[in-house]
Length: 470
Image (cartoon, rainbow, N blue to C red):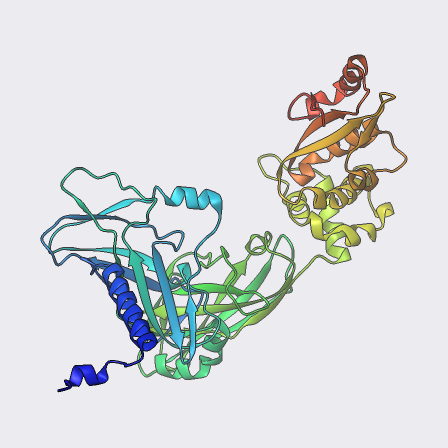
């Protein structure tokens, strides 16, 4: 007699062996599966019709301990290693990418320890932009996974705390995100919903130091009087050429606070000053500015204003005139600071400036800035710059980096080139050090003489020249 189980078992021995291996593999996989997490994870995004990309839209993490054991884990919120976030829009899923900077990863090992008491929860506040870069508008499904402890993490907790090492996965939460250009495109509809329309005009073109001045009108299209807290209820947005909010840019309107009262059908006009500091550290290019009104669950934007941030010949000449006059008492030399900030981008423009328009101080500053613009690529970031010189067999000095030597005056001696470099080091934010590398056959006397030849430069160097054989 044949049972049903024997009828289903393969008769060929090779097939029986394959089925046995498959069952064994499944058993091992099930045995190695991660144990259930003792912690539950819940994501929370405050309810709103939509959030605008570039706003600090919250993404809050809540960890819940439903058990009876005290638990400890590491909260990071910095490197995207313990925590991972994904956002799905249709068939497209965006995932958070972990940081890879070695210094940051080392600090990550000592992320702060968090504690979960039995039957309690703990919440951490982050922003959506801390985890994801959203480039399209839409209604997203956001979910997250968090691992309590990585293998290399050791939280400092007292005895009696159980370490949470497993991973918790949240249920998806839904939120609508709009890019800034799409938000502004809804301006007319939002004005009807809020009963408040914002209009923005530019009173003058952008100036390097003075910036510009904007005029903002607030019109009440509703049937009730509106009271608006000026300027705290409004925010300033600066967008780059790709329509993204410029990081670390000004967001508050600088103006004396007051309560604006607007009757139905009426409008008020306010001046929005924007000085050059708003863009002074940003790359040259095209920008857009708009004003955002937000209160409670409602918000509405103004139109955008185009800003062309660059330095033309006339503006460069004005800055050079002002900078060559030096800093005023108690004030920094803002024109010189601005020229130094953008020295890497000004080389060609500086070459076209007519030097005869300036006095002796202005001409000297122009020549220094021209040299600084040529040297900037050799040390783009401010800080220590080590100039390496070779000591030749005849005792003379040569630049190891020939391109650096050519960027300085080609006909000048090595000493003259170094003198010129140290003279303009402040324009570059450099601290200059010199390292001497004797070639084979160079005597001790020649090396000593080489160091001695640079003695008068020592006050301008960050340290004494050192000799380091190749």
